[in-house]
Length: 416
Image (tube, rainbow, N blue to C red):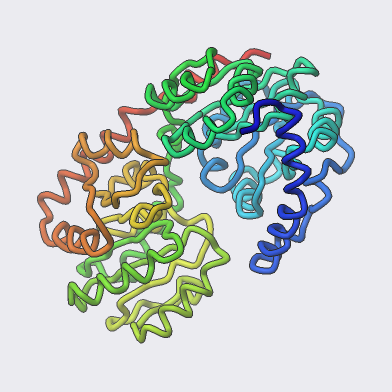
């Protein structure tokens, strides 16, 4: 058990060779990991002298969740620059798509004392905002030493994460209490953070509810639906993870409905070609979104191999199955599907979105099933029951609207 930041730092240095090997392995699969490597160790291009607000969003989901908050920060503090840091190339690319030159971007360094100190001294943020579960002891300690207000916002703490942090509870408590404030997504998240020793917590709700669907993507999705065939049932498997595509494909064969189109959008772009190879080996008739061709009548699966178009995929489907929930990945975000007004089907593994899933089910916006076969059977039943699907669609939109407001509550706790 690690009980001090010194012991934690020794462990970070000990694990550094493994981190570098992991970075190399990721880069061999996604060559963008080779870019900007010096930033991961605290080496950056010269910075402007204008005051800067720093937001850390580790990857794609957090970057999208941060959008309403970043827009509000830009509105209220136009004299400040916004720096958005990430840990993954896909997160960085998403930031570029959403904000263009309106924000600066770089990687957050590894949690090495010298690297994080250099980062903070180089950019000198007037405020730091960490999203969700980014609890880095050396970074947060360095911020406190420099009197930089640091906040953990849209904070969540699953039971799985709680068990992991309890292994070094003294360090976790010290780190959490070095933060200026914590904005938790739910009462359950707040209670788990309190059980680790955190004290300065406000429940603000989930920023993802404040994300407005892009109207151009909604229009794009409607156009796609015309290409799919207006009368053809369309089931979307959104943000699938490794192993789930094979289960869904087997379930598709089992329900034996040749008219149904299954749209599969893998969570990670580096898996697009891998999933395409699996579809080829299976013998199923499939097409790729990137080919941009009309969908043939005999096509059973459309592989959504594009980034930044999830809203369009939701707008083009009848029912959405949420990836990451069919195997033990903890589920991906179901809020975007609800905001577009799509009935949601989610599997048994929801620890990343446990509270949101519970509320969506209670609202009549979502159904929970035991496995991939159950998901496809439920989806097929819904597309054949238009009245029930319509009720769920209306419930989903209402559910998404009723839980908005986290951005304003979060802004209220930020002091700098």
